[in-house]
Amino acid sequence: MATKDPTAVERANLLNMAKLSIKGLIESALSFGRTLDSDYPPLQQFFVVMEHCLKHGLKVRKSFLSYNKTIWGPLELVEKLYPEAEEIGASVRDLPGLKTPLGRARAWLRLALMQKKMADYLRCLIIQRDLLSEFYEYHALMMEEEGAVIVGLLVGLNVIDANLCVKGEDLDSQVGVIDFSMYLKNEEDIGNKERNVQIAAILDQKNYVEELNRQLNSTVSSLHSRVDSLEKSNTKLIEELAIAKNNIIKLQEENHQLRSENKLILMKTQQHLEVTKVDVETELQTYKHSRQGLDEMYNEARRQLRDESQLRQEVENELAVQVSMKHEIELAMKLLEKDIHEKQDTLIGLRQQLEEVKAINIEMYQKLQGSEDGLKEKSEIIAQLEEKTNKITAAMRQLEQSDNDLLTQTRTIAMSLVKYASSDTQDQYKLVKDISF
Image (cartoon, rainbow, N blue to C red; front, side):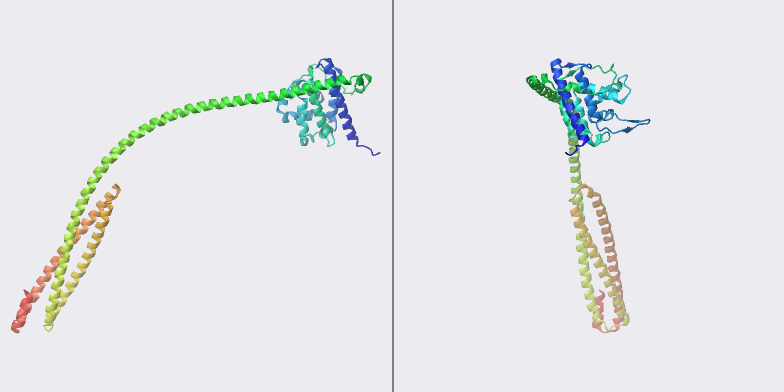
């Protein structure tokens, strides 16, 4: 036969001992009255078996002076994994007379049994195997399935009420030896199978009731927390409602004030628009009058230009007949033509200026239909128009003066021609006289 793994055999033995210990403790407790104290032998053997189970596969840890193996390290780890275990850990550390970690571990097991939370605490511990690997070997009972089975068996201890005095008990120097004689079967055990079945049924009912009670307690606690949160949220909502009402009242007041201010601003704007409309109409009338005057000036200039053109044509025709005259007459006629060309250029420039004035007038008429902001610009454009009008008037005056000068020169030339032509024929004298007058 193949040899079995010694560690597996040890785990199986410890599991069987745990089963016997837990079963014997529950049965004796039910027959004894379910309330146990520290001197009860099955209870003492239960703690010894649990101590051996927790010590199985425990790593040797180096200390400053020596090597030690203690189960207090993994039990102390429960506080980090299960917040409700902080109280039991603090109670163990505050107990007087405990000097060794093993004594603290034994006290922790007793307090956990009295709280009926030993199964819950150890379940949280065996789930975190990565953390347990710091304290146990890989083949330890707490690292294998046997540990989970033992934790499941510990749930049945919740039917037991233990009243243990941990404070005055010497837990550091106790020797944990398993008494196997308590678990050997005899004829009385075989005869009490019916009684065991009844006890098992009672225990199952007790476990069901306690589990249901635990669920109800958790439900009640969650409902209490939910009610507290709802009350807090209701209080906050009431405060926010009051703040919102105050804000609404303030906003209504501000709205009323803004409406009154808006009415005042609207009245002022209408008055200002009426005044602006009157000013615009006045300026439009002024612009129309100025435009009418400019049109008259333009027509007058065109008429003068046409007259000058006709006059120039007549003078050219008359001078063409007198080509054979003296060199002085030819020079005078050339000077006359040059002046006429200069006047034409001046008239062309005046026409272009009049076109520009007309375009500016059209642009001014379009801009007058705009907003109030363009009034200043329009006044500047009107000033420019007035300035250009003055310049055109001055140019027209200069043109008239130059026409007068040209007429005077023409008459002077004609007189000289009369004097010169007095010795010519009668027909030439008559022609020159007609030209001069």
